[in-house]
Each structure stands twice: as structure tokens, then as C-alpha cells.
Image 1: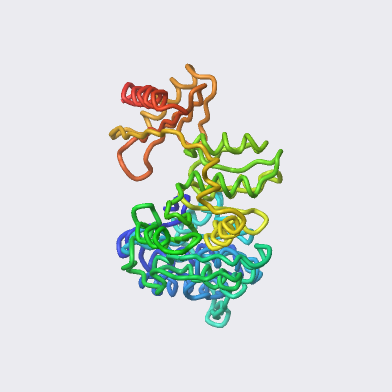
Image 2: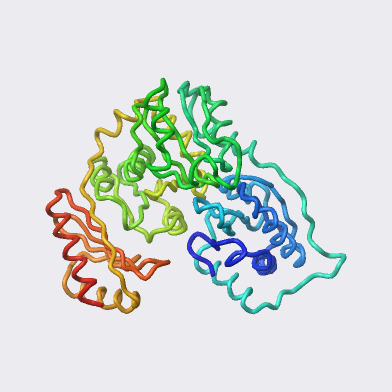
Length: 434
């Protein structure tokens, strides 16, 4: 039921008001006060109503933020002294989807144990409902202004940059407000919240951000910023119109956040270029499974100064363990204020990366066979999420798709020929295990 990003799927099929009601009842069994907020999808209203009804039936008070960015919800749990938070969102998914993601007071998403508890209560379908006179209350609350204040406090002084913010018709308007407060000249794209995402698809990929890149590159701007539907993700465009790859952004943020002797948390599919760039600065990495919940968990360790995913989720643990797209926006604007991004990225290496998919109806059996073979044949192997093998030339990763009958293969090396050879080796491992 729960993936690492919560419950997510098509509305009326996998995600229904009945499901939201059951989630509310299950969560209410372990909470007294819960913050809820939603992205602009129209279905979010009925899902929030159903979720709130389930919470109130168990005696839990609901603080409703209304339309709110996911990081605003994540931060508001602690601000409001609540026990948990729920974002009603499908994040970067298409408009026909919606979902529910649960947050702890630290800002960290519910971990595997927490998700399992809620799942078991839902499956048991035996809620402890309150009498008519002991139901929980539902009140409205406002957290966006406090989020903006926190963003402004995260940056030293006025930035005085010219910025284009592509809100993506989502919930990331706090970014615009914070940048204006920080002295930036801000122009917006797709700023009107609209859960149909008419301006561009919600996920801020290079392809979906072509209009932003063109506007920044051809105009007199210092940088561009793009969010997804709930603003937990942030991607950026340099002043010359270059869309920054996720690994490049990760390297920039990590090098700025971590000092020599500290570590940063990165998922197993992160480019070797990030590790090389940080190693030159005395910063080590700790690898995690793919998913911001795992990066956040690693970021709780005292010597981890930053965590990030190339997909656009960025975590500064001293601020919050929730991926905060608006915080990433003001941080990248601060970096651009000190030195143009197009100049900064020149120092970050770029290595050839190769990918392939192998179709199979027996993903788990194939992965078990691959793992057994790799552990016997290679010295440097990690099995955090699939099987990752490091060699002198580079690395390869073999992972089962979570949604399709595929095993995904990724290989990277410092030279193209080595990357091709590693991909060939990894693909053969999968094909021989079928």
C-alpha cells in the first residue's frame, strides 16, 4: 500500500475517499493532533475531507493548512506541536493521480516501521471510534508566512538577483515570496495554482523546463528555478540558460553544506562525479537506497551535513528532514549571488553514464540470482537497493523496477569505453540469471 513516497496512484482507482478515511482512522490511533495540507489537485479537497473525518472519528484534532507546499506541511508539524502531518499530494505525478504522504515532527517522512503500523491497522479494519461528544476538532491554520520567514533566515543578507521562478501551477508560491523578501527581482511562470498542470507537466525535467531555460538564457536573468506540484523538488537553470543536471546540483549543494571530514547522503544511483568532486574537498559520501525517506534517515547521523537525490529532493538536516524545494531555491540563489552558476559548474566533472532495461516476469528471482553471483565474484558490492558494484573504472547498478516487469541496469565510468563495458557486463549478468 505504502511506497517510499507514501500512497500514490490514480484517483478513483487506487486512491479513493474511502482509502483516505481508513488512513485517517489508522493514523488517529497513534496521534492526538495532526497537520494536513494539499497540493492544487481538485481531488485533494475530497481526500482531505475524508482523511480529516477519519482522524476526527478517533478523537484526533486536525489543523488544516488548505493548499500548501509539502515542505510547509512537513515543517508545520513541529511548529504546531503536532504528532504527525499528512500531505495530500501526488508530487510530480500527472494530474489524474493523487496520494497521501505522512510526516513525523522532525520533518522526516514516516519510515518503514511507521508505514507498516498504519498498513496493519488499515488491513485490520477495526478502528477505535469516539463517541459523538469526544470527536476531534478541525480548525484552519496558516504556515506559509512562517515558512517564508524561515527561508529568509536561511540566507545571509540581500541576494539582489534577477530570478525566474516556474511554479509549475503547483504549491510553491512561498519561493516567490521568500526571494522577493531577499531583494530579488522575480518573474514567474505558471504561477497560478491549477492541479491540471496546464502550463507544463508537473515534474521539472529538462524537457519540461525548456520554456524556463529559453526565457532565462535569452533574457537578462541570473538564474531560473522550477518546482513540481507540491514543491518538494527544485531544479535550476544557470544564467546562460543551461539546465543543471541533478547530479550537478547535488555536487554544488553538498560542497557548500559540508566541511572536510563531514559526509553527505546520496542514493546508490548518484553519479561518480559527485563523489570525485566532494573527495577533492575532503568530504565523504554515505550511500542510501533510492528515495528521499532513506536519504533523510541517513541525514539524522551527526556527521551528515546534507542529503540529496539527483531527482531534485534536497535535505539540510539542520533545518528540516523534509525535502524542501523552496529552501533549495533560496540556497541556489545565494550561491548564484556569490558566483554565477554557469561559472561554478565548470569545476564539476561529467562522466558518461549508460542505461538499459531487461524485461522479465521474475524480477525477484532474477535479482536473487544476480546478487548471489556478484557477491561471489566482486569485492566491492553494496546491496542497499538492488546490487551496486564498484570497480577501478566506475560502477554498475542492477535494480528491479518497482512498477514494471523490468530489471534496470545503470553503468558509469570516467571514460566512455569503460562505461560501455560495465553496462555490457551488468546486462549479461541479468540476462544469464533469467
